[in-house]
Image (cartoon, rainbow over all chains, first blue to last red; front, side, top):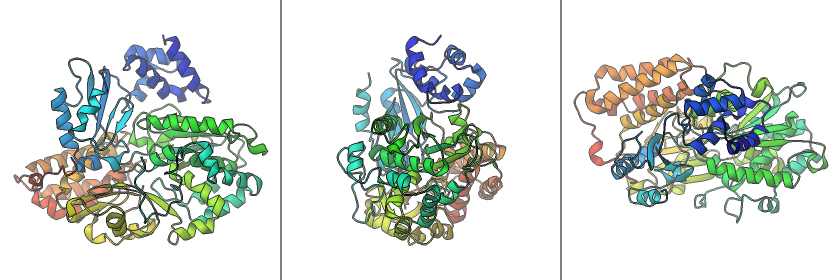
Length: 154
Length: 436
């Protein structure tokens, strides 16, 4: 079952569409915000409320980079590996980040604090290299400043 | 922050960017805001608006450069179905981040452009499809929408004209493919973002199978200044058949990367050296990708190409999204080709085999090549594979992956040869990581 809070948020989104299915990305984002990731149970809950099958929802969930079908840490660090960020030092930044956190791309720190994922172009190319933590984008990130950024997320 | 303005800019769409609270409706109203809407509602007809757009030579800023006036004229206005206006704010082409600024610093200009599209085709509902990564922009846009509703620029009976229009934001969840118009519509309907076969085009059967106008943020944002100042004024800012200004994103190895509004037809040299301050470390220019990662690379000797759709096409590439990516002499072209292919292989939606298999095969071949396992015949294989993807997919993603690859091989064959069997990448020793 969706929680009352999840339902209330989703109901607001539903008002703007003539078809309930249109809100399914919103629904998954809302549930993900509350539960961190989208378990099979989460998809069942959403499916019941929107009148969609779990298979259809799974198809949508697995299509998009920002919907997580596996558990993630409290914060998700997404580091852009597209062409401009690569030109401007993505690899050094990635290596710094992985050394600092002791994880590889796709892994979660043992204290469950961070999951580090590669991500495609974040649309911040004039400030490359760029990364995103949860919903925040950071530009001109250097191996030195990445430490300050991480410190903001407990 | 917006980029430091450059003296070379001609600021039409970005002219309010530096103002205090530029995103607020009060700033907008104090600086010509919603004048175009008033004019469109009170002094113009749908046909006269279309005529101004045609005269303006405005061409779609999303990448394809299709004339906007013509696109809007394809919508069957008499259709009994509801009509929709959809704004593509799913800016995801690597190198591109101009729409982000238009939404962050002047959201009302975008709203006004969308409203005018609604007047032209008789639509009463629209969506701004914002990529999921631009989360903070949703808040800015939602605030702007609220302001517009509160002041009577959205909702029922707008400015007492009898015209109704509702506008909403819709957020994606991270998929390059959803920047393709038909995939975007699928996504907006709550499905996987895979492309539709066309025809029918969205103008006839788009969102919920209804007639739909679908344009990029920059395109809609260009409409209010055209309506206020006239199509002729706008056309004259650019070059023949390429009206107006455009927001260029300058990134990569330049001293002053940024988003700059320049007249169409501005020479590449001026953008890189005068506006952008030249190459980092005063190194030699090697290559420029002129319109986002899907456009064929240009060599340094194309530096005097005017940046308009037709001139860049003549130089063998495309102006695309106006995202100019600069690479200096220490950049490994094979590595750049690989990096770009990794992107397309990941973002291919998997619907068409030539794209799904082609991008991954190319990624593997380029990876092997760069890591010293390349064979002479692989150079031909890479080119051949890419050529066999061209035109054989539902949507342009296959072409977007193939076109730059073909250009990298054809224009920088020597760099591929430098990587042949057993030789380590000759560029690694220089260190790629100039900006880090």
